[in-house]
Image 1: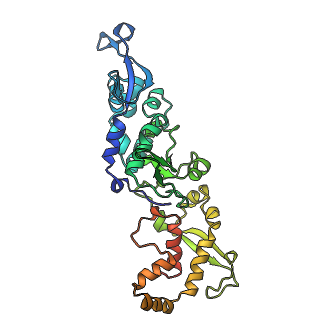
Image 2: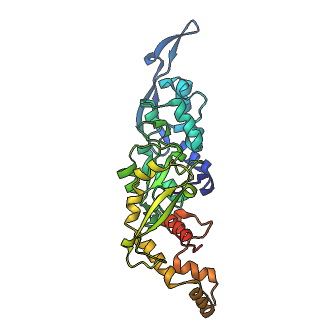
Image 3: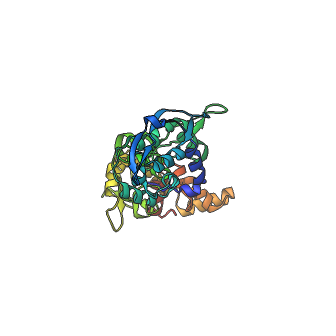
Length: 333
């Protein structure tokens, strides 16, 4: 439910360079084994490329993934020249989400062994993509739910371990040419990625999309039992919280697929604690604490209610959107 801005998070060109230098071992068949075709009234031999095992590291028999992509287009291997036409490898890897949508609409679903070989995410996951995110992207919480920490941690001088998965917003099996696309990769928790989302698609609703505005359109709302008056609440069972969208129902399916309402109801104690503190610490009490401690009023208020700063990155702390929305409803900010 949080927005990603890859352009501000790191130099996205670094991702392109990082991925494009991946090496693939290939073998260009000799002329006698090539297919003879007619071209402009002359007999010519079409070069055939035989795929071998993927290699990582320096090897004289290998070419970069970008080089092989261009080689396929030039030699019309697997109809690459028709499928990708004026689409470059760089555009595929770091084009923004709107660009990926245009490419997806142009190409559609493809079950092509050459495409799957070049854009094979599984082979790159451990060796390239995960290390890049660990080193360059400070992932803290799931961008789909903001419930779970998914941060990486250092296990020794050279190695890291992580708790995040990278969801392919557009399924890599259906759209293999988007398997390595930066804006198609969403850092997420295992629950959201593997158990809930699966192959669901949502128009313009990727957290990496420019049009993604879950934060402004959808808010947590507080509902109180009829017996509750003036926030005198005895139990968390007397309250309820739900995500409500203003002016449209664009995010209804998104909320349903990720079971956000059901999952957040388990954590009503966070809201209950905020309401208790609101009753225990009215403004007059906060002013007394200010006089006693000499600390700024807003700092005391922030510490007691665990408030989120207006411009703070919500992805850094679990439940940050919940806290921010309920704080606004309780008029704490």
